Image (cartoon, rainbow, N blue to C red; front, side):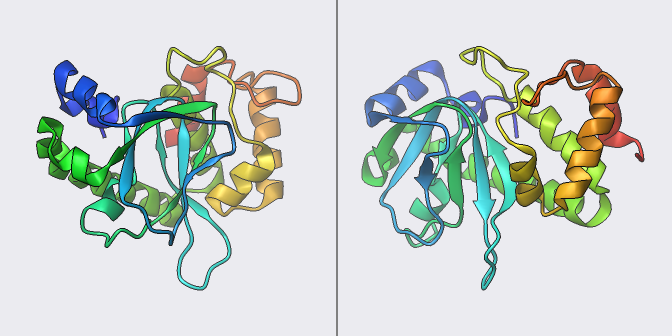
Length: 217
């Protein structure tokens, strides 16, 4: 997925027209933008902040992380086109976010709608690496990759882009790993100077963090 999401696929004029077709809405941190299984006849154009996309398999109670999104991405477009109007995942704000709600009928009349197929294909192909991580990567690598992507997706509107907007418990739940594994690895990262001190998770050395995403730790 190109940085900037759907915004990177359309012109400035097309993006401006897309936002004008909707209504701006704030989504405080922790607020759900859409919920899995619910119906919706609109999509959201995210302009500020990061969100996590969580999905629960049939009969499962735990929501696992399947993707991260940021300003420039669309939310809920799959349900609106080919999904029967039913949301396939729950999307939760990691920061104080802003988005424009755009009715599906209004979106379909916009020039930007011509890029939707390309965008959906990119999003579907992006879900493959997340499934690969579940099978082939150790918990430490998955944790490091999550932290690195959160930093990479931090937009200029964020006052503290190196601050991780998830607790250790939330990281464990999102990745489906043991809480003890997260705590032990976070302690290792702090000893190595990758994370700063204090109760909040703050990345102090992004380049060093990338070292943990690829090597066997």
